[in-house]
Image 1: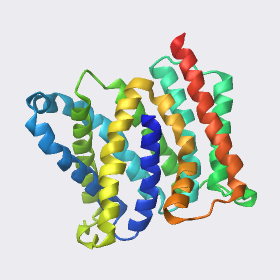
Image 2: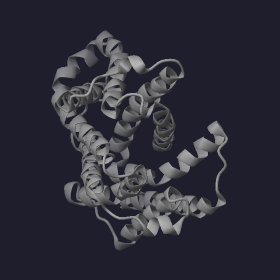
Image 3: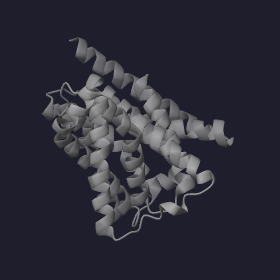
Length: 290
């Protein structure tokens, strides 16, 4: 349930990000998300002695975790210079399968042929929603330089998920989240410095401020905590399998928030991706029981 909550919050971030797109650079926007979320947690960490003492021992591991996360964002932003959001959304469906293959080697988790088939079925269902059931768009899909950059970013997103479990110790979870956000702020600040872009935070005014608040609290602070907590408990493969639900959740939020109609043509894709997610969860539960 916590992973589903996180997935809903992430889906909401697509709507908020759409409102903020073109106002300031994506790198600057992500930097602001990390810094603001860190500042919200800072007084809490400072107030509780055991959390305050755990920051320095936790920070080196958190810097590694946040590095993978930040590289994903950098690759994503760079890829959009030469590819489309449709292409990146399609390629992102590879994340669950790539994560499962990596965890097979790192955590010695087995993966069956049946599961691999289900991963591809889940990706197919998600693509059905992304391409709005338009076969001609799917057939015209082709890889370009930006797509290759994003595939690299997808690999680092898998590393981010795996590192959350691999590098977790008996720290207080909230301390690891805080340190990860601080690390992300440092990495994104370096990316902004090397890119030569300006902050432009002063352009966030009026209604845009509310969308930014959602990105900071709902789509950054809450989701980093939820994904960290659930990944340690369930493992990267099970958590990332919920990625197949993202397009369906975005469509649902658009319907309930903006009143956007749902095309009946994409309903089969939603059902297929949802079924694949549930089957993968059931498969992992059986392996855990064994």
